[in-house]
Length: 404
Picture 1 (cartoon, one colour):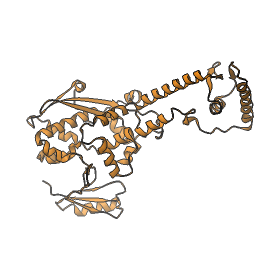
Picture 2 (cartoon, helix red, strand yellow):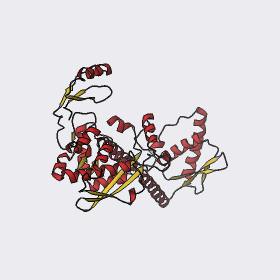
Picture 3 (cartoon, rainbow, N blue to C red):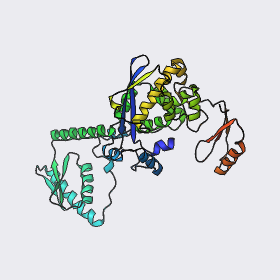
Picture 4 (spheres, rainbow, N blue to C red):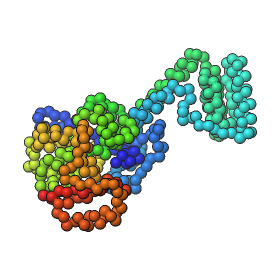
């Protein structure tokens, strides 16, 4: 999951806020936002797409035009810090690449720089114009002049369809301050625009609301990596930092295990299965969840749209809360379901192995060996599942649990 969160980007951000008018009565306010990252410092310049993933999104009617053309940009905290550190730099770091010149180009630019030096030392008030330089040489001159003459204003002026000139002007102290203030304001505006959806994440970390998700670990990895900072090197450190941001997180996947409903055991614990069961007429009618104006455009089920999934997850949590009551639900506070693992992640304590799990470790199992183990154990009624953590199959988990 960590590798996936580091490599891929979020396409949609779904949030649903629940307000309570009275005990056991809630109103849901869902939001679905497309995200599309702009160029970010310290991040890979490529946008990685999985063919399987994109095929799945297409099957779910994801609006790719809205994603690309209207997607909200975002930064994480480290990327924002890099951009802010560059505000006072006289020369942006992106333009610091070393440009190599031919002997003829070096001779030509040296002559030009010598002429500019004489013009500068004379204190002349008229403009100095550099003409007939191609884009590469103009960039080189822009670099050199920015380094040698910080108090020099440089503008690029078009002389026609294919020709441009560099116009140099000496700046007074007052003009330098105005120019620097304008540059700072422009850079801050760029940071504000690029931050985009990160502002919502920052607001949530300040408000520290109860966070609810279904199989929420992967969502939290993406949110942390996209909006906070690069993922920590260890699970222990990630748990510690995540808990500081959000002290109360509930995972409806783990809570659903305590419902002890035969229909749920047969249908599985997917979000769709849990929602269909809990929303069925006559089931857990003590809790009422109304949909606010933001979600009334849904004329049908829209699973895998982030905003709809967030609403459905909150709905399930409200129903579970009404059915199991707070003391039972609180047993699962900060206890998160971990996909393909024989334990739940405990954000405030030790991750304890499920009592019904046997682990085979110390070897790299190949696919053929795993198939042989499964075949050998298929007649044992107590063995209900065999899992492995990743494609390399470093650890093999045999789940020993009698089917009910």
